[in-house]
Each structure stands twice: as C-alpha cells, then as structure tokens.
Image (cartoon, rainbow, N blue to C red):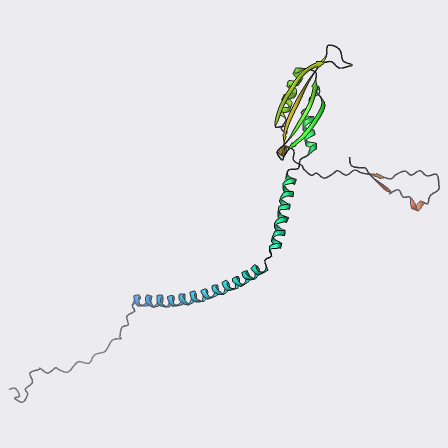
Length: 239
C-alpha cells in the first residue's frame, strides 16, 4: 500500500550507474585556420608595403636634391661650346666621307681607254658632293674605234654615264700617209663620288739596306772604325 505522506507525483530516479568517461574530442576548423593565415599575411604585407614606400620616397628625395644641384651647376656657355664643337665634328666627318681619290679616277680612265685613242685635252669638274664630270677631247683612227671606245667607257664600273658629242673626221696629220684620217670627238664622263672614295694605305718603305759595303779610301784608316757589319740606309724621296 502506498505511503500516504508522499504527495509528489514525479517518479523517483534510480541511482545512476557510474561509468568511465571517454577523452574529450577537439575539432579543428580549416576555414578558421585559413582566415588566421590570411589575416597575418595581410598585416605583414601592409607593413612591408609601408616600409618599401618610405624607402622609395627617401630615394626620390635624394634624386630630386641631386637633380636640383645639377640644374644649378648647368652653364649655358658651356653647352654652346659643346654644340659648336659637335657641329665642327659633323662637318669634318662629312668632308672626310666626301673625300675622293684622284688616282682612282685616272686609273679608271686609263683602264677604259683603248690603244688607238689619243687624249688631247682633259678637264675635271666637281658637282657638289655628288659626282665628277670628266671632259676629254679624244682622237682615234676610225669610227669603229669610236664605237668601241664608247662601249669600254660604258662597261667601266667607275663611270656612271657616258656622253659622246662633236664627232668629226679630219685629215691626216703630218707624218701620216694621205690615206689615213683621224676621227675626233668629245667624251663627257660622269663619275660618282661614291665610286672613287679615298682610302688611306700605308706607304711602302723606300729604305734600301746595304750590308757589308766596300769602302775605298786612299788614306789609311783605323781598323776599329770599319767593320764588316756596317750598314747604310738610303732613304729615297717619296714620289
């Protein structure tokens, strides 16, 4: 029979069983770890950018000070001297590049002249820095020689243009038979400056070395003053 003094309607719980507790588990959240890493990386990057910006600003200030110092030391008079010297150098270089070899011109004329041609007169005129105009009064023995001579001028690589004018047939000169006649004409040759540039070449030595010379002298000489190894160097004048 139930106890009438117990008015509680909540049932009593029996004694709890005492068991062993397991170890507490710790959870590692990857997203949180990545967030921390990014946060610290951002802070380090900000600090690095700040320090690097200060370094660049210091360098900029130093360069500005050096630039202002150079501006203050600039001299207009010195600049004009440098520009004038530069202009003279350019002019000298231009004249040097426009130099020609007269020897090359006459060598080209000689190489392109046939054996039956006689040059009576020759004139040379320069047209600025472009070309030389060579005008020659020529005599030959026949019209065929004239045609052949014009072809030789045209085939020469130094001569750019050939003009033949004043072709005339004349009588034989004194000392020639009456059957012979002369053909005279005028040849105008254009020679570009670029075809005959000046080239400096080392001059060949004109010294002649004579070993063991024979010295003839009527007066007695001291043996010590004459040796078989004496050498005489004769310098000839360069033509």
